[in-house]
Amino acid sequence: MKNVVIHRANTRGHANHGWLDSYHTFSFAQYYDPERMHFGVLRVLNDDRVEGGKGFGTHPHDNMEIISIPLKGDLEHKDSMGNIHVISEGDVQVMSAGTGITHSEYNKNMSDEVNFLQIWIYPNKKNVVPRYEQQSFKKERRKNKLQQVISPNEGEEGVLIQQDAWFHLGNYENGEDILYPLKKEGNGIYLFVLEGSIQIDEISLEKRDGIGIWEINALTIEVKPNTEFLLMEVPMNN
Image (cartoon, rainbow, N blue to C red; front, top):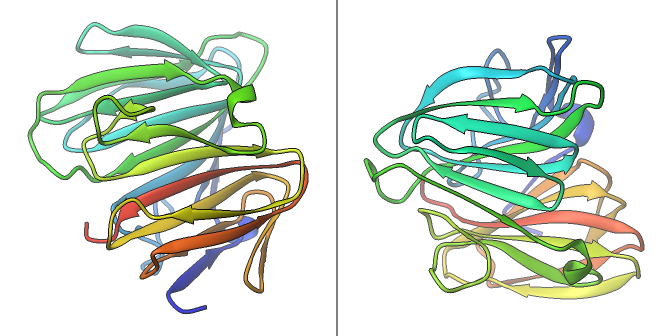
């Protein structure tokens, strides 16, 4: 298959700060690899585990779409717009940093860790008014199918994002071949395996492996039983 990049789980950057154990698919903080700067507009894909009661103190962002997807536990969010929310497994949060925002994220629980995906997307328009939104998505609604959780279009299923990107979560108990047609010409797909395994042509992917594919109109995915994954369709021009 042409136009493919594969990121195996054991090749990700890793930083263990004690309270934070983080794996970086793309260059982030002290982890730098010039071959792994981004996939199109997908700039950051971090797999973070935070100890009970610990978290990220108040810090600034601008002109970035910041997405948090908890996989386990509860994360408390506070920001300079006055938002105070807890996001849990099943929730998806989008923060459009726009002209500038400060925020903090802490593990809401004192004893149990929280595991969440932290994802950054370059926006398609700079200096927008900062915006915050989160939604809850029932896991049973993605049983053996794809569930759209992020969209650029108001009125569509999913949290609104300032970019021509669509995210889907899939939770497949049964083995199945699925076809995903791209929603916008010129976009690419980055697929991240959360649990289980998938096959794309001759490429096998296991837990926490990632694959980026571009210059396609549709993608056929052979999903093995008991597999969960995140599919991100994103523009390739950042």
